[in-house]
Length: 214
Image 1 (cartoon, rainbow, N blue to C red):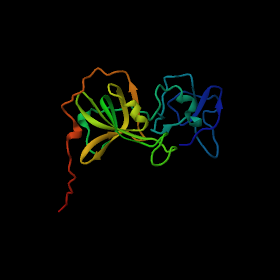
Image 2 (image 1 turned 90 degrees about the vertical axis):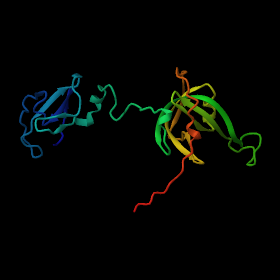
Image 3 (image 1 turned 180 degrees about the vertical axis):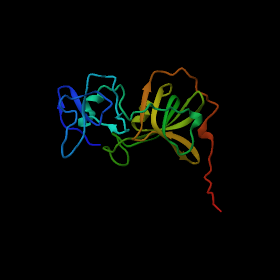
């Protein structure tokens, strides 16, 4: 199917839309070297009941001229956006990624702090590096979260956070939750759940097993 050409007033021209709109007067069957026996129809932009893509009688998808930029403004939600799916702590598995969780910070302890203003082996101008191990959880269990640099300031004991696009790293056979540059941490209003402290997933040791296919 070929795209039509031209736009009049606040109407879009379509080709092959025999089941939609009304034919443009005088152009019901325009003949040309490019589009023989084609009917042009126009549909008012103000008709917000119309959604795209549309189809004609023979199942061809009808696209608005100009990529439908004006029509896209009528859509309540942008195409391609999906609602985030949240996971519970007890559902975490080794090497999983793309995780979204709502967590409470039970405890936070800085385990590495070096560099920055005031010294360090790399000089007074070196960048400060901070790493903290934070015990976080929800109503299903707990896990150790590895916070780095600016993340340390967000992961304070008692805070409720939402982590997006998080991942599971393995450290000495146990799981650690982390957020890299592709993820995000948000401090939110306190959650109303109580952390299940007797189910610490970071205390579970995993062993890598090589399976040989016969």
